[in-house]
Image 1: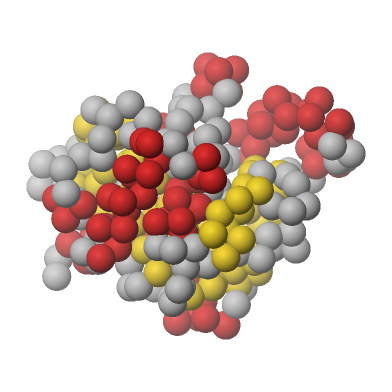
Image 2: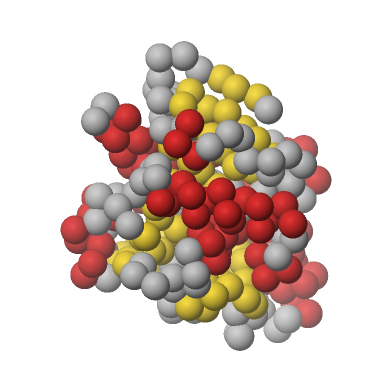
Length: 248
């Protein structure tokens, strides 16, 4: 467990659910470093690798929770993942601000009764456009983003069915469930607000042989990578949500 920040700041835990490819980690650091960079410096951040340790304490001990992506698959229901899902369900019940990204998005959906499995059309990767639905206009986070914006993506599994009562916020051409909210304070996003365009290109380089084998245009995907500043803003918007919520 590693912590950083001011003891007066809201306490936020980053649940790390795996690690990136070694060659990407060597160049850019690991998942938790990318989230640390994108979240507000006014938060006291603690990183817990839940593949190696239990989620820390009770969710209500924290003022905010972030769940990273992972090379693991939610549908495998590994013991550490199921334990984390139970903890996440408690967090939602306790109304702790929570943001799940990619694996975290899928884990949130699974924890709350949705269905997660492989996308029937295979992999989505690269920079893609996310379109927001009308429901996003009244959402505390997504109301502050454009109706359409580019985002970095890489995943094979998806939320195939949303949890009961979830509010669908966004889609892409490939993925109908790009973003959703459960209750007032828990969000899942399939896209990666923590990725820079350089990290996205590094992923495509690693994936290049597989993309070709799958019949995808690897060169075209690489050429179409662009910055995704609006998607990246989500981490600051979520930080602001935690700061406001911790004052109430």
